[in-house]
Length: 527
Image (tube, rainbow, N blue to C red):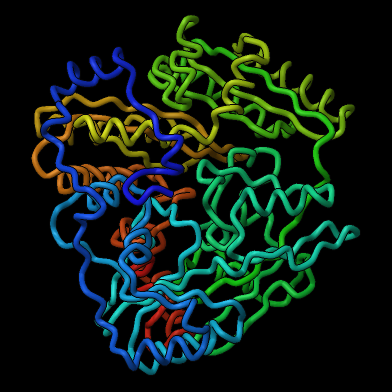
């Protein structure tokens, strides 16, 4: 990916003249007010490692898999949040890992962890680099330095059982590569978060990722049947039977969502399915968000089986920032745009589609046919590319997400909108707050917000203040601190509110048992 932007530089986009004029007029901003720095002008903190440190690491993985070169340290200096990208554009000296190391086996990972324990070096696991919550911040946590442990060499389909429909995938496999390997054998995982093109199997597990097809295939943690992890104490395989059991607490849950704080995940065994025979899309219009949300709740609770089920609010429908090239989809008819998709054997798709259609019609929906759904599918991973030119032209743009009960959904949406609007108003900027229901369950749903306003002064401090206000609003109004972006450094201070002081003590006890020296990803997850 680009070092200072999202994704493939060849796919970078520019604002249309109309959109640029709208941004400048609404937010009173200009590209002239936005600092920037060329890559060859970026200054990184010098590596703190000694020649002896580097020699010890090289003895484990080989010289070719250890580097302190700035062109390798810079892309691993953070993730892809707006805060990360703003920091990349700074002319000040930037923090980065002291070294990048790429092991190729569990034994090498274990030996590296032993060396880092002995030498008091922090270890930050690196997969695809798509964290948007500070999960890759190179924090030493009081230790001597930071090692970026790149898992790119764990890149194979280790096993595929066509009877049990389970596959074991290397943690370093990207989403597209994993699907390519499975498709060659006639199978699919079906996990498609917006970060799909770059994020990795290990990252999906470490963050409890949720993909856009979650209505049909579940979240990533629903797909996991087992994990192989390396801790400073040794290698551990969890989920031995591949099925549910009653052998005490499920240890898989300790590592799913643990964000590299408890272990290095090196392989994940997942449930797979045969490649879908049929895919059908249908878009819907609802008169307002409340009506649409009630319709989605009816579908989720009836279990009629769509693969994709999502609803944009009125603002998002009008601006349609969910896709780059289809701005305005749904706007001509007003109201709120919903997308449904159905996959699988043709006869089952037909039954599920018909049952879902009846429910949506009964709850006030009007079918728009397949076209807008197909357009959404074509551009489903492109949204983040629009953030970069918006930032470059003075807008402050970011996303955030939460989850709550159906009965609390509308109140929480309003509370977040109010917190964001007040935060921008405090610096004399209007705000746009877009929202969609991204994932649905029988008892609740996830709300995903896209936020835009004008940059004022120190944009990093500006957004940090707004985000703190939003996090406080989530806690005050029974929202989850995160649904699928994870905790990282950005949400850790709210974890006591989220799980309670005793819950934090439980996580700290696990951390002490597995990583007594505290080398694994300091400053993340645990308050």
